[in-house]
Length: 91
Length: 276
Image (cartoon, rainbow over all chains, first blue to last red):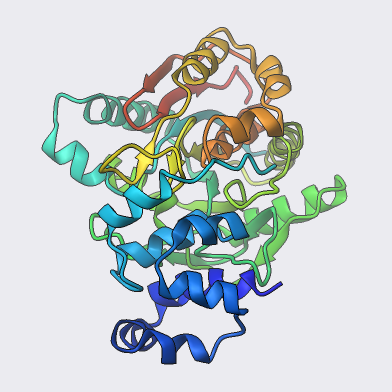
């Protein structure tokens, strides 16, 4: 259910500079205000984009995290990690 | 009465302004001016644009498959890619309202927006081509599955075309689509060191072959949801072109159809038959 909140983090990272800065400065505190379950929170803090992708997070929003360098991600790290995922053919 | 003077399909990758500037001999730098010249020749009074959104204008809290902007003007981009310049585009709310009502009466259910900010999609090709037209924006969810079927997109485009042709003012209308064909963006099939990939070059070649032969109906049939998902997580953008071709109304051979295999998109220009 709360994968919505994971997706929302990507959107807020793009749109909300204050949230983005808090995510950079203190990720655990920034995530504490969101409706995440333990597995989602753990995967986010680990920058585990494969797990988040498998949980149903949208890859555009995951890549936004890497674009802005939050949760220990950058574009190179993101690239190396997401390519390990098995593609989901969602339709 | 309004008539449709032609259609075009263009790409919108947000890095294209940089690509075009840095590689003047590349396919993108060569094809955008050809499309721009064709549009100039067709002298449209208004453009009706079928354009994807990348979860920037709409989001999972409220995610329509189809949305028509009924606005005096709209602006963007709202997704912060530096090569894309901030822009406010003029629109035609009377034409947009007519299209909304006509498609609603034709049993489609588009959402409507009377305050619209768009992402890079539509702005990139207009920026590169140096165009500042009056645009009625139709935003399509083709990137957050499940998405509408190709048949539904094409049928909706057909209804939009009929709506344009039933609009009383004597306008010359161009229909435009923007998007890729085989792109994977941010998903597992991206290339090392890049944010994107092109999972299925054979599909791109096949799409170009069918469009070149005017086989739009066959392309609609073959563009099943499963096929679209297999050829890239952004491959649904082809549906914007199928909607545009539905609006155009016939299946003429294009005067320009050119693939760009590196990023996985295409350029196309279609002239409407006499009478639009």
